Amino acid sequence: MNFSLYIAKRYLFSPGSSNAINIITGIAAAGVVIGAMALFIVLSGFAGLKDFSLQFSSYFDPDLKIFPSSGKTFTFDDAQKKKLSQLEGVAHFSEIVEERVFLEFRDKKKTAFIKGVDTNYSNVIKTDSILAYGDWISNNDFQVVAGNGISRELSMGVEQTYTNLLSIYVVKPGKGLINDPSQGFRSQKAVNIGIYSVNEELDQKYIFATVGLARTLLELPKDKVTHVELKLEKQANETSVVQELQSLFDNQVIIKNRIQLNDTLYKMLNTENLVSYLIITLIAIIALFNVAGAIIMMIIDKKSNVKTLYNVGASLPNIRKIFLFQGSLMTILGALLGLALGFILIALQQQFGLLMITPSLPYPTRITAVSFIVVFLTITIIGFIASLLASSRINQKLVA
Image 1 (cartoon, helix red, strand yellow):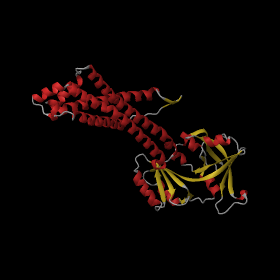
Image 2 (image 1 turned 60 degrees about the horizontal axis):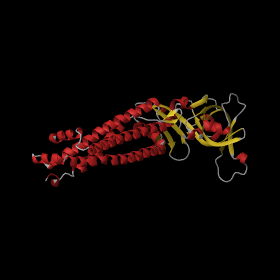
Image 3 (image 1 turned 180 degrees about the horizontal axis):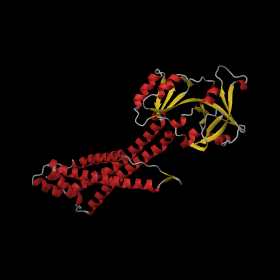
Image 4 (image 1 turned 90 degrees about the horizontal axis):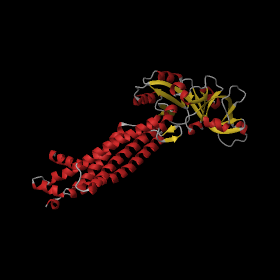
């Protein structure tokens, strides 16, 4: 093997006897470099895009969220609250009452969801990160914070007085048709004291209120909630916490983490990442099979040398290994150079914003160790297979 590797190094770094051979080899090497660089850039780009897309969920979604296994509400009494506050791994929790409502402000109307939260909600969710204007709700049951999209549709700003009130309506439970619309709804009035902004979808969906206002509107008892949202301690064992929570609520609840809450988004991003990886890999396969062509041309160019090696005692397997090693070395060096160039381009993008999505927003990227490993293994494995196919062309007829 040392003999084959030594000869392979000599062939790789010494020019061929024909200028055409040198050009073909150069094109093959450039294809390896470009393939590795393109694949690394794509993986880094999608890693950054995934972080950018999911950063909104880190602001808005809790570490764990508890849902009723059936119906809209479940019991969350004082004894359960006390046990939950003492549960290892749970840093904070907030009780939530959520329901679809109808909003009216100065003759403008819109459907949305009211999300009633308690004072501990700011410890579970970074409310200061999503609040765009005004103030967050306090203990006042006549205050709400609306989404930016809701605010625009209703032409409702941050009110300083209680002269311009938002009307909130919810349908009364029951069956059959409503003969008198005025009897079919419960209503409450509140003043909008703040505007939050997360993303276009969520900005159109919620108005935040106190859990007291939401319960009054829905006529719910104090021990009923629609959800409980939790923030875990940094070193918490999520699986263990989930098991304890199921025991606390007698297995009558469904518990989801942040990934499960955004399951569709995660699947979409992962699918796009996989498809892009496969497309670039296909292009890399085409480029890397130039290596096979270059090796075959090199075999033809070195035919007389091959015969000499065979005549002085080199076996056919050892001669095949020479060109297998040559192609593999070309692939490994090309992959390393491509990774280096890709790293430099991504670093420049992060530093200077070479590619912009908007005038103020550079395309997000993230460099990960996984990207280096995946690119290197993909390129080298394909290059090895191409070199193996090319070196197998050496047979008894060639050296006869």
